[in-house]
Length: 137
Image (cartoon, rainbow, N blue to C red; front, top):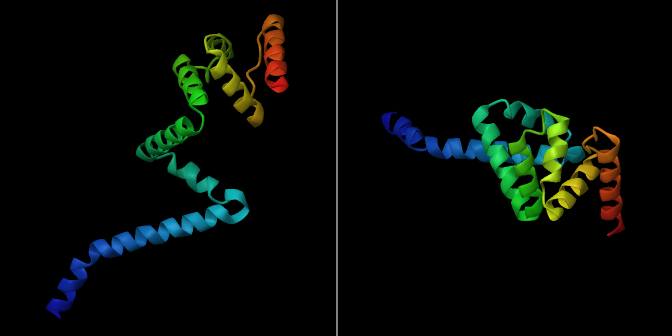
């Protein structure tokens, strides 16, 4: 009896790893169902844990830097400027982006339907001109 319980104790790391692999498999299977419809609430709950949120943001930034470095640098600049809180800061920050960064950001924002709202007629016309330039290419 002592030997059997001792062997079970030695296999504890194997059981933990097997459990983690099982959770990962279930998570990946659920992610494939209806385009991840059932994973979104799980991920939203996971982002409430500060450590997991930082890990996810870091992984997301790394993936974005590999896929589209201009967009990644534009987002980093906009985050530093605090555009999430103030639309006027967003417009000022957009004017400080390079042409490539601005183009990449506007394409991504246009795909998501989240274009920043211009605060006056001049900015609105400039944004329309930028959109026409990016659509013409």
